[in-house]
Image 1 (cartoon, rainbow, N blue to C red):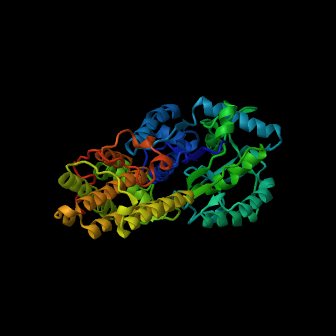
Image 2: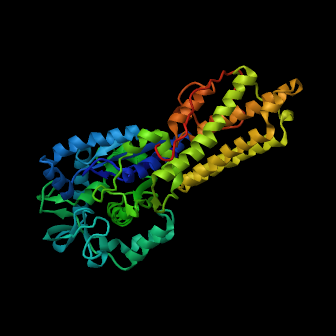
Image 3: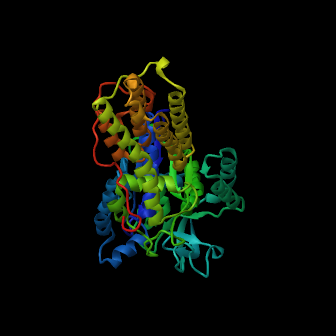
Length: 517
């Protein structure tokens, strides 16, 4: 992979139902990171998609009176609609029922078999259909899966097994020598501790149902849905179909996943890749759950709120900003309507919305709507220098936060500059300067600094609130899509040209009533 390529993935999502907030959460975070990397000038490959095989999907389709393929074709457009409504800028959307996936998955499994990494055996165990995974008795709570609240089924059948146990020592070495392979640290320690206790070989086929990809040398078996699903990350990158592209794109920089599936991504996935001498992903980041009423968001538990339910009130930008900023990424977070209204009003309507409205209005009122020429260094005061210094510190801190996969910290850094610009308005009082003809140039310097602050804020928040950032960009008289800008070329202080004509408009973020929205 070239140094300029940045590959980020979401989990691929089960299509047993339409998307809820818990699905949208990692998707919005992935989009934020992808957009910020593009802003930095990186060539980005951002992948998402749907997981369409397995007994869980087969039973969902049966309950709807449909064949699994028909159910998949009917429900997948709803996922596309949700991601479009949230302005998700993915580069590829893979479905595990596509031939570009199924064929290479069979090649992958055949290659494992040819290397004697797979053998035939028999298995009896407790299988949770919700997790699509076998469970040990000590993992259950009152005999039920703690994630799905259902009793596992007893399964006994002949299966093919992958020799997972032989990779225990290599995996331990990986976790101990590369602290960024599993993040955050608490998840790495959990995985490391469990792997040190020993690994059992992995059952990788099923014969009790047929909705899956057939084992190439024994087609009465279908490939275990997790072995099938994990490979989406390489099949979308060209494995088994386009070697040149695969070598350029793989390995992934970040697999962004929920903490409930960290075992599959941090243990099973690297072991499978090790078995075929393929490069490993650089980071598996396992985020926490979004909780409603103390429970993980889930359709099966009636806590699966649709993103559309919130976009109607908060807009795509308000939705995105809240979930990026409110929760410390990596930890569990609690969603509530009240906290969403409070965050929206405080940060978007008050801090940034009011700043934009005040600055554009003052340029219109005092300077005829035309941005003045940039000031020369001797014209700058300590207040001006402090504003510029805060910008430079904030944008640097944003970059470091994105490197650490901490979107909440990145936006916290951006808002330090937003609030500094608000404080600068109060400190330099342009309305006072406007009353004194001898202060006309000072007024121009101040309003240029504020207009330039808005331009740079547009860049800084564009990964979080792309629609409003683009609108603010245009109100400053700037042309072209923000997605074509780069921090290297456009992110330096003083890049705003004088002579541009600004325009005001409706509030970027109208205040919301806490009770009614």
